[in-house]
Image (cartoon, rainbow over all chains, first blue to last red; front, side, top):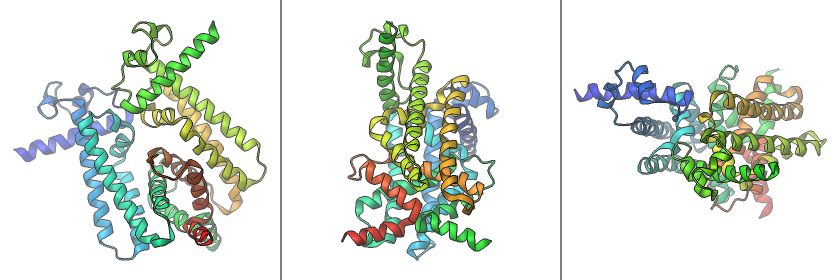
Length: 199
Length: 199
């Protein structure tokens, strides 16, 4: 019974994320979510007591998934450079699968009530912290601590750029990951050289 | 008289952007904005008919400012590489001055009614289009068109990362701009070499 309720909640959250990422949190009503999840107007309150609860469920689960997948991707690799590569590919790999959830995170996290907001921000910080460590290990003493911190945000900014990117464009998530890895490690020159090599 | 009303509207918008970027659009009321702008609860409606009108005024003006400053920065430079540098420095330079407006753009644009939303997105596209052209000119035929498009988003993602960045950290916007320029042009190796040179 409980498992069934959890499944239902996940399904409602999936529909909620689609609506939030498309119409925005403010413009989406509980009735909209109920309709998308094929529930009655009142029926949805059996699963979530408010729209903010739906938002929190979406973001909390999404952060758990991305943290778990990041740890898994890194556990598989010993080489420091391969860990940087693994992080980039893992991050961008979420794009096709969790587009609505990621967009909801970027645009709607501030609509959470304070206690929920704090929990999500703590998980985001954990993600940033892991990224920081992967970069710090790769760079070693060649990079100053505050440079690594700035670089952490620059790298995550590069990775998140895929969410602003028009998916009709023929660059796949995999190509995007490779491009970001190349820029980070070799800069544009490296990509230009590769292009020349392909000709 | 009209000039005075415009000044008042700008002042209200400034307060609105601060509140939206701090509490979120959904959690901010017209009463909150009126209080912050030192107006009576009813007085604010003399200047804006709704919260969405305040949001639109903020974002529309912000996009006009960034587009104008981008064009100015580029007009000053002939050299293709210097135009890339100018674009990065100009973009990041907005950070200390327009923090609230930029955060409001990232997080709240989806809360605009459709007709307003379209206008802002059109101005964002114009900004992306200019960035695309600057990169395409710099790369010349060495980069494929879809690579330039992807690179445009990667570069803007890097630049926007400063808004996720903790301002308590001792890397200044200027250092951040330089780091992004170096990553883009030379990759990490270039920065490491510079660090070695400083020692």
